Image 1 (cartoon, rainbow, N blue to C red):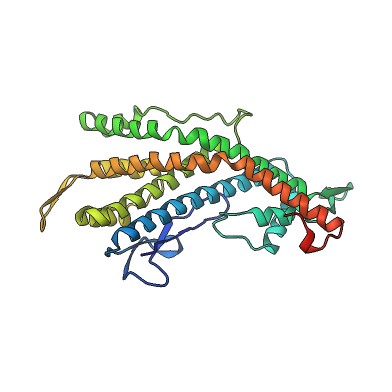
Image 2: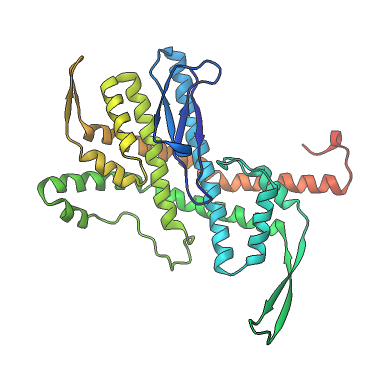
Length: 341
C-alpha cells in the first residue's frame, strides 16, 4: 500500500492542512475526508497491507514530514524578506519579486526552491525609475533604482538560515508546551477553567523589538505548532487505524469537528472530552490518552525536523557553488560535455 503526501499552502505565510491519499496505482478503497474544500485532508481507509506495506507507509510518512518542514521554512523565509521590503518601503524590489514569481512556476508547497533561487541569481540586473510627485504638482523627483536579483536571492537564503536557527530553538520548547498543557488541564479539574487559563505559564517569549529575532518569529512559532500538531494527529490516526478501530473512528470524528487551527487549543479541547465506552468489542476511549499520544508524536517529529533544519547553511552553500559553476561555464563557453559536475 502506498500513501502519498501533499502539504497545501495558503499564501506565503500560512500553511495548509495535510492531505493523505491512497496509492495512485493500486487504490486501497474509499478514503475518509476530513474537512472540505481545497484544505481538506484524506486518510486512507483501513486495509490489510502486510509487514512490508506498513514499513513502506512509515517511510512515506517520515518523508512527508521532511518535505513539510522544508516547505514551511521556505515560505517563512520568503515571507520575512517581503516583510522587510514593505517595512523599509522598498516597493521597487518588492514589485520586481512579484513579477519574478509570476514568470517562474514554483511548487505550491515550496518544498524545493533551489531552481527558483538559481533562476533568480542568474537573472540580469535591472534598472527602474522611481518618481515622487507632490499631489498639487509643487515638485517632482526621479530616482534611478538598481534591482540586483543575486542580492535578493542572497537575502532569501540568509533569511532561511536565520529562520532555521529560530525554529531549532523553538522546537526544543515543544516538550515544555506539552507539560504545560497537561498541568493546565489538571488545574482546570480542581478549579474554574477560566482561572486555570489565566494561570498558564508562558513557554515561548519573544520580544518584537529585539534585533536578534526575525520580525515574524512569534506568528511563525504559532504556525509551527499548528503544523506539528497536524502531523502528529495524522500519525496517531494512522497508528489507531492499524491497532484500534474504536479509537480510530472516534479520533476521525473529532478531527472533522475540531480542525487544528491552533495546536494548543486543539489539544486542550481534546483533553476536555469525556471518556466514552464502545461495544463489539468492548472498549473504553480515553481522550486524554489520545492527546498524550499526539503530544509524544509532537516531540518525535520535532526531533526529526532538527536534522532537516541543521543542514540549511550547507544547502545554501551548495546552491551558491552550483550557480557559480553555471556562470563560469556560460562565460567561458564550455561545451556541456566538459562542464564541471
